[in-house]
Structure formats: structure tokens, C-alpha cells
Image (tube, rainbow, N blue to C red; front, side, top):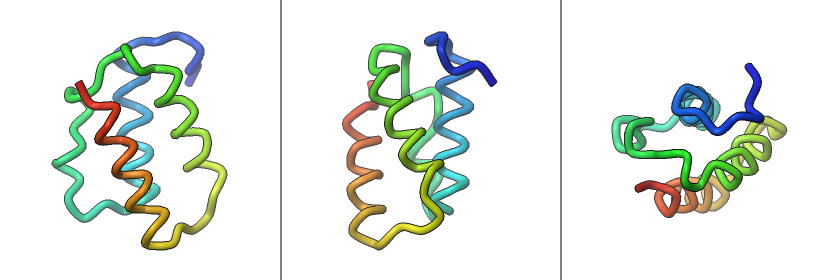
Length: 73
């Protein structure tokens, strides 16, 4: 997947991948349609950071989810 272009499809791909990686219990709270390309660079940065890690502490997960929440439109 080419994530260099700020498209809705790329946003959907990244949000779904982050939810899967974090094994979010309430994944419905982070629906891809709640995000737009307005914060695309921040979302790519968060996606890259999450994909590089194998595990997260509970506080790191909370921080990631909070950041995702701040990127919602």
C-alpha cells in the first residue's frame, strides 16, 4: 500500500491496521469514516510508530487511543 497519497482509502487502511495491532476492545469507537485526510501526516506518523512496535504498555495504549481521538473530525 502506497501511503504517500492522502486518500480516504489510505486513512481507512491505517485506522484498521492500528485497531488490529492494538487489539482494541471497543474498535467501533474508532471507525475510519470518523477520520479525514485533514490530519493525514499525523496519522501516518502514528501508524508508522504503532507498526514498528511489538507490544505496548497500558499507558502507551491509552496515549495512542487519545491521540487517535484528537485526530478525529
